[in-house]
Amino acid sequence: MLAEDTIAAISTPPGEGGIGIVRLSGPAAFAIGKKVFIFAGKIKEPQSHRLYYGHVIDPKSGVHIDEALIAFMRAPRTYTREDVVEINCHGGIMPLAKTLEAVLACGARLAEPGEFTQRAFLNGRIDLAQAEAVIQIIRAKSETAMKLSLKQLQGQLSQEVKDLRRRLLALLAHVEASIDFPEHHDVEEVARAEILEQTKYCLEQTAKLLATATQGRILREGLKTAIIGLPNVGKSSLLNALLREQRAIVTAIPGTTRDVLEESINLGGILLTVIDTAGIRATEDEVERLGVERSREALAEADLVLFVLDSSCGFREEERKLLEAVGEKPCIIVANKTDLLADKDAALQAIVAKAAPRPVVPMSLLAGEGLDLLEKNIIDTVFAGAVTAGEGAMVTSVRHKNALERAKAALEELLAATEAGMEVDLLAIDLTCALEALGEITGENVSSDLLQQIFSTFCIGK
Ligand SMILES: Nc1nc2c(ncn2[C@@H]2O[C@H](COP(=O)(O)OP(=O)(O)OP(=O)(O)O)[C@@H](O)[C@H]2O)c(=O)[nH]1
Ligand SMILES: [Mg+2]
Image 1 (cartoon, protein in one colour):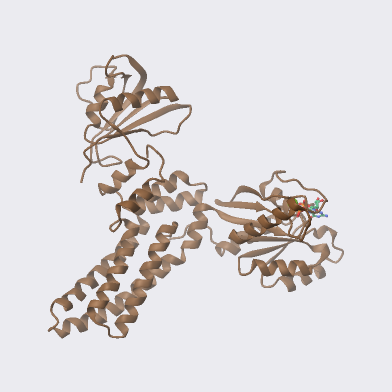
Image 2 (cartoon, rainbow, N blue to C red; image 1 turned 120 degrees about the vertical axis):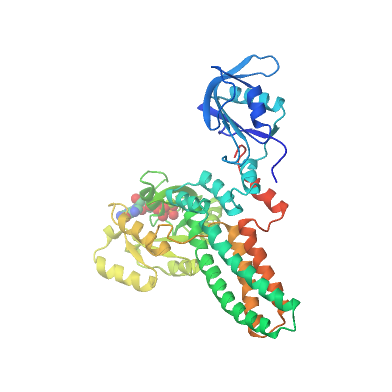
């Protein structure tokens, strides 16, 4: 399966830095590395996985291009399982471009985005879910996202999916035996009992994995949090408090915020993408009306809604209507401006009664009160108190979620068909469907188009 050509790319980000790396992988990597490099000392044959000092040269003229370190890494103990060479140059645009040019002149081909990782997958070092975890690690924006992706790279999700596939393959073998030998009725009887039991188990496991998908996506991509409310209730003040920075303009004039403002905050290792919106009201003003439209869009896309109200105004009729638009989304009521309340308890009780069952957090953003309680409530509402990635495998990608949904549907069909005493050949069809869907996750069963699509989202040089 090993590729015949040798690929090369600049593997460090563009721009200036202390060092920059040109990486080569493939059968000619060592030969090309030796052509473009002269060792400082007398080295006949470099050892694998060691760094050597010397100069990168133009292979035609012999002119020095840069002072550098080079490492030769012998297959299979490498990222791609092929021979790999890494040249550490100075991290500038020119030395890297010139070094890349030199290795290309010696016969290497410029790598496609993600091609190094694709080779690691094709050469069987990692499966597809693990390859996808590599890019997730690179893109991780919070500690939790990073931990989650690392688990996936270590193969936790893959193990669970492979276990399910192993069970279903064993079933398929049973079923095919009874198709091939229909005169042996006992084979079929055993097969049916076994199919029932195993299908139930696999369905349960698939459902368990699917149940982690929403939280998995949020932990990886961040929690989309929309601050919603009527004008002048303190939405922008809340954004500023969460950011601990005067980001949004706050004035006593209703309708101050005209556009949505988006900022990221880190809440105990979780990424929150907080959106401050224009206060929602009917308005003649063209700019404000467009802002209100965007507020409604932000509301529709949110994972969590922070619904701010001015507690000195009570729970207004427009707020009841707006809360209806929030629907079943996780939502926390922020009862702001408690500093203006004469009888705090009574006023809050009235709000709690109208907002139920949603939690109400009393706050005074002016006095800086209630922020801790709100942050605790956010974690409780979305993560049921637990923000860690948990013990078991977690589904963090939409692609995996879709595949699991298809596997689940096929298993449900299989269960129903088995219970209804359908022909064994029909059961084989459902089994194959479930197997194919699961195989898409780990890459046992993927088209080259899909592979192309997945790896093209990678960066060049990875
Ligand atoms: N008394 C009191 N005033 C507050 C409190 N929080 C905010 N305010 C004031 O309320 C006014 C409106 O605050 P903003 O944060 O701009 O409100 P907003 O909801 O973003 O308003 P729009 O963008 O116009 O929809 C400002 O004058 C704030 O100083 C509070 O806890 N107590
Ligand atoms: Mg505002």
